[in-house]
Amino acid sequence: MDFTPTPSQTVGPYLHLGLTDTRSISRIAGDGAKGERLWLTFRVLDGEGAPVPDAMIEVWQADCEGNYAHQDSYEAGSAFGGFGRSATAQDGSCTFETIKPGCVPGPGETVQAPHINVSILGRGILKRLSTRVYFAGEPANATDPVLALVPEDRRATLLARPDRQLDLRCASSWRERDGIFRCVITGNLPCRAEHERTLD
Amino acid sequence: MIVPILKFNMSSSMIQSRSNNPKKSVAPFRRHEPGTQPDYYYPAYRATRLRAPSQPLIYLPNTLSEVTGPVFGHSSVHPNDRDLTLQHAGEPLGERVIVRGRVVDGDGHPVSNSLIEIWQANAAGRYAHARDDHRAPLDPNFTGTGRTLTDDDGFYSFVTIKPGAYPWRNHDNAWRPAHIHFSLFGPAFVTRLITQMYFPGDPLFAYDPILQSIPDERSRQRLVSKFDLETTKPEWALGYRFDIVLRGRESTPFE
Image 1 (spheres, each protein chain N blue to C red):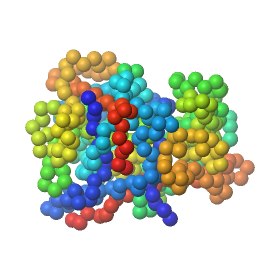
Image 2: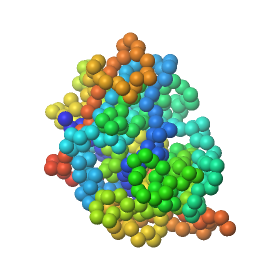
Image 3: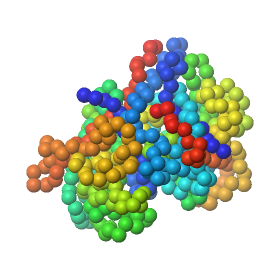
Image 4: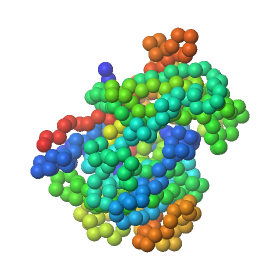
């Protein structure tokens, strides 16, 4: 038998029905999760800069000590699971409450800087788009083996920056605490004119 | 500002296991064969024109971040979640069907205890979704969402209603073939798969740019379920078989 992987298809405009109406996870770190608490806001824009109101972001991250809650290390009901997903709002944004991840081992003897793994799904996206969020001002960024693969002039686009003015209307039910970082990243799916065929 | 899109692929020579720490060794996942997955940019599907990456993709090594993934336990699924005909007071209208299949990895090994989520239109081709304005009736007895975990051998099954085709304005007189959306996680962040299952013999296949975005005809056929007499229950419901293959690993790391 042929075990070629099943092809991907778009999540479509009604993804909310199956994935986020009742199964959204915007609070990745619950009460008692160790680490530096932050809110991470994404904004998804299309190639003309218009907000994408029907996308979904999924994130996967390590805890503050750099451990993933995977298989053997998974504990049901723990304050930190590491996985989140949320649909974008009319302005293309969605926000997660989480903690800053620790450093994670990289290939060989390298160490990866704190980062959050990101999937972008939506109408018009035929297969999952993958990217990462790093944190501006993090010294470990300089030696991160994955960030090093990104052309230098584009690295800044992967950095989340503290933004104390950020409008967190969608998070109004969340409590204010000392030491909360508000980070924003703008994800821009680029325009057709610049399109180059992918290497897949 | 254009966010680089990283590809979850890199030649295995980039991956070195940490011989002094076996727990940190990482077996990378295999790359897709050309033509077996859709391209991002497929202009016949209009919405890809402004949403496909324009910059060259960057290959991403499989590190711990890529080869780990979220775990969903039995507590995340209710037994009735896999029967979409039991979620309301009455029975939904339409043709009752059983969809059953097996989830395996690229080596044919079962993917067990793994979350599958589905959603779909009702028999009239209408989603129970605020943004669906197709002039077809909603069914008060059908929401169209289900979830289940695969069993120890990778098998799953859903009981549902065969969804209707519906118009979608992508081009003149555009209709989507009947389909059920499938979402799977598998064992790692890179095995995440969202796809659509179709029904055999649908006359709309040739006109559907979403299905046709997959270049290879054999790969397109992988999304078409097969009528299955073994799954069919006498006097009750037709059965369809839909097997799913998630990405497999390149090789076992030496430790």
